[in-house]
Image (cartoon, rainbow, N blue to C red; front, side, top):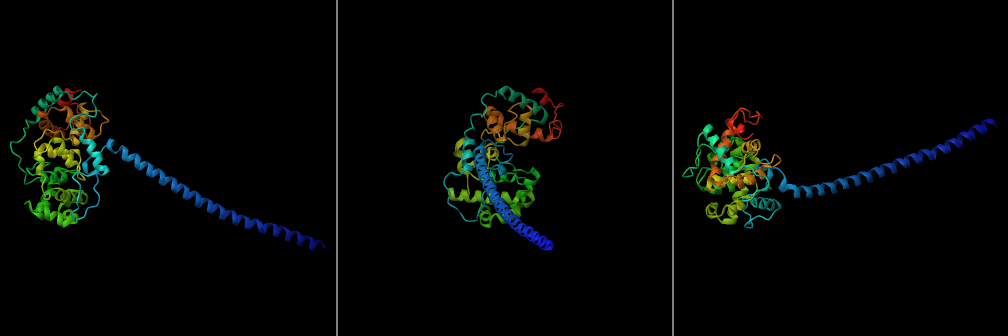
Length: 346
């Protein structure tokens, strides 16, 4: 009898335990399903937030700092086929660049008084005393042994040379230019050969200059766009265009930012334009000629509007020379206490 009762109690406990294990398994399935739903919801939330952030970033893009032109406007993939394009691009990138052209004659910092014409004259005189005078050449001659940022009597050649000089040293851009010349020659017919060969062929030729994959796409797409818009590989019509019109057309091309366009204006077209490269940006910040928080593009707009036209060429060239050669003002020195240019603008 007692044994029967113990057996009965074990049966009851066993039967009670069985639904508990089933319940646990059921609960685990529910938990997994809940976790899947939660993960799906989380992924959807993240996706929505990413889209919102992208939209916010596009709105902020015009205010963002782009150290160099290629990085500020990455080109879409290019093909070797000639694509019909409108006179000026209507993409978000070209819209951003169109806004940049509004600062050609006006500063984005109207309440920032410096540099004054007197500041510019003083800096020019001090730089001349240290590095010698720099005058605009009477005739533009394309250098044979260097890329020469914007230095060419052909606007298209000047633009390509300046693209090769982006985000690299003068020595590297020269290697790229010489490699391109060796592969395609230097006659005007080379542009058609470069376009026909596509980015891969050009990339191989300019590989030693740095960023060859990006620059080859930019240059081939530039050639395609020029041919599609004008029926020939030439931009020499810009010699007759206004500064604003020339700047706007150049900025419409992928990979061409304000600095690159300004270099072509200054060195090829012979216009008063104040390009801001790494050295100019660093030194003008140290001299108090721009707000410290200004991006490079904003600094260029401000300085182009405030530096007197007659000093834009010599000051640009002299500031670059000074930035390269003055040990006290180099990027690594950080002080410039022994430099008389820096002392004059304390």
